[in-house]
Amino acid sequence: MCLSTVYVDTDGCRQQVMQDVATMAVEKDGYLLVDLFGVEKFVRGTIMCLDFVDAHTVVLEQPESQFQ
Image 1: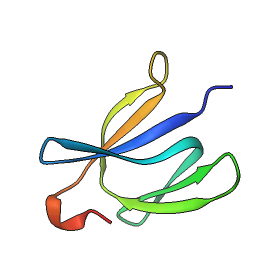
Image 2: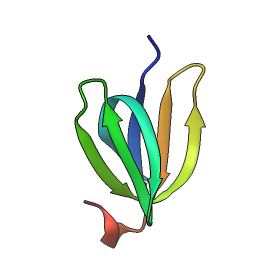
Image 3: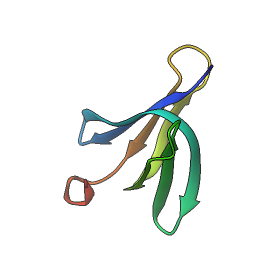
Image 4: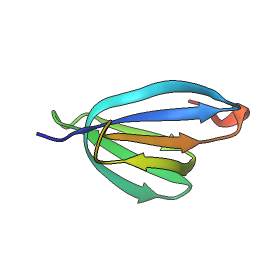
């Protein structure tokens, strides 16, 4: 099973937001993440990097003042 881990990069500091992400949908000024168990989390930001082959990661970039 290939699920992803989502990170937020704020001024070069990367922090894990959610793991086992099954779906990611664009919503307003960010993304709605849903994990394997249906838990939802909204994160603001723009996509900085996607790796679906090796690390199965998504990195979102956002200014320091927007981190939730």
